[in-house]
Length: 240
Image (spheres, rainbow, N blue to C red):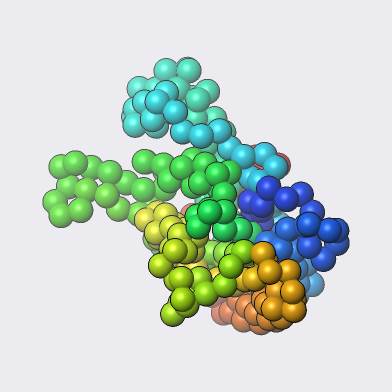
């Protein structure tokens, strides 16, 4: 049995195929999960909505607590890190992460950036030793066999590889960097464009994105049976 972690980051509460002004990324992520469950009903799905309930941003106290060794943390430090620990536990328990992440002003929404800041944790998802030769940092999830799917949407067009404004896209590249840093390097992406135009080009982009989502589900689900589960994986903790 596999555990899928479904994350939504859009500030829009609904889906674009269900209500006016709904979210395209919620639409795509819901489609992915529904298709996955149809193929693999035995799998566990956990859900977290960082658009509606964003994690608290990192503070000075958080940094102090996170960089204090576990055996030397005071009670207030454990309290400060409680929500971050829950997010990390949840991530550690997931085999497949499916994230709906729209582009806001060329980058990820604030709630998703706060999520990343809470899961990129020294001693939990990456290691650090200043006395280590070469690179003092290393990923702790490199051998966990986790996969990441990012489903995005953009108001303009041409943000994809080779596109006219590819250099202005800081969504997929920043996510790839952050998750790769902790050892999750297999990342698949699908995106909708032309949202601000709201014409036939948007409809064509949505239709194409849905086809790509369906094909991606088929491909990843088909590969699961031939891929052994990562050893030592822990079950996830809190969800919303």
